[in-house]
View 1 (cartoon, rainbow, N blue to C red):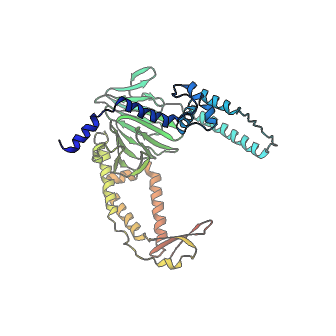
View 2 (tube, helix red, strand yellow; view 1 turned 90 degrees about the vertical axis):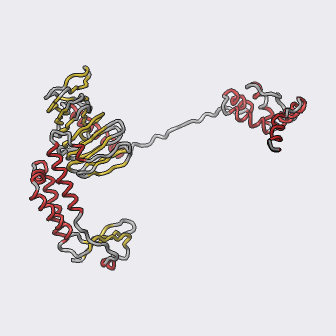
View 3 (spheres, helix red, strand yellow; view 1 turned 120 degrees about the horizontal axis):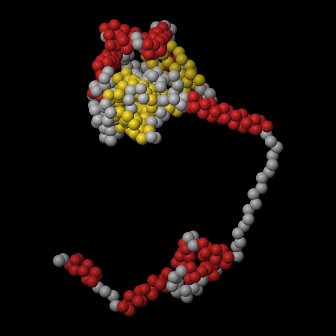
Length: 418
């Protein structure tokens, strides 16, 4: 043991004499309560605190006791009342009056209009809800043990059975089911899956409690089709996609169209062949594997392969090279607060259209999908947009610029060489 340890042990084992300890305690008491201060020497309760009030008001109390009293009255109602009474203060009554103004008929008319509009909307919504109180889905195919969870208990779900709003349906081990929703969408359920279908002003919502489903979403006339997994939401207008929900989260994969996935406040857009998970704990798989169990797997996988190949081919089309200067910058107005310029994409658009038409002619799968009746509006929109863009860009120079100007009310100007 070194010298330092010996000193520490001596200090630790040294006990002061009783008279020395008493003298030290007395010094602490005098420091805390003050020598000769009015009031009791030891505070045991509210009565002792209240005896300190006169010296507190006369400011003859020690700082230590003043802090103790102020801290106590913050929590003790009776002592706070005693302090207020000693100060001679009485509760004040505050009178609140209102001034009657002349009615503003414009505001009254606006309020009545809003009330009437609200009543009309509420009645319209109630009427629509009553009018649309029919089944939300129908069991189109039932292979194996399928169950409906109703108010009357768990009942078997046979082909043709109708599902009420938010009524749950489940598939047992080894069972499969196909549902047709009221809007024409179809939902294929794998084994050990459970879901319910509801409708609101937003559209139709499939609440997937567990398991794997494939959705063929019909074109939505109003609202969207949603799939809710608890930790995420999928929104579509018309497409084919898969949602596989497990304990750790859900995996969303797309075979056709575009899917918007929102989870943890963040949104992402998925194209054919892409997938995303609602949790980092969910491992990614090959998108094709998510559709392999379906009864329509041959069609899904063929379409997925064709769309993926088309997307890869379009991405390989060379785009205009990098530009380090803008020829149109010299023509920008002096008061422009923003300037942006992009290259003319006429050649790129023409090449994209050529590649698409070429692939369409060589692929029966892609041609059948593109010419299907449900894709008529998509076909017309794409053709119109591409034709207008090519027509416009063919008449312009190599660069298209835009400026934003005007300090108080900014407005854009688009210009290019012709």
